[in-house]
Image 1 (cartoon, one colour):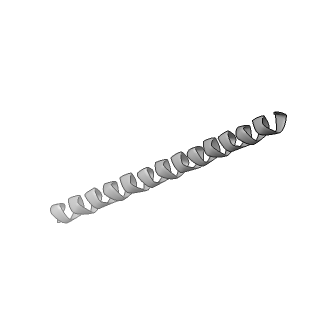
Image 2 (cartoon, rainbow, N blue to C red):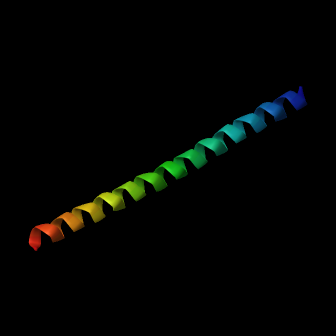
Length: 50
């Protein structure tokens, strides 16, 4: 019984951890995309102004 509980707990913790890591990665990717878009817009603006 106890062993079963600890195994299931570990699995849940691992799942949570994986989920957290994925979330972190996603937010990093989103930030990168945003900054890329901003840079793109800025360069477009500069071309326009020339």
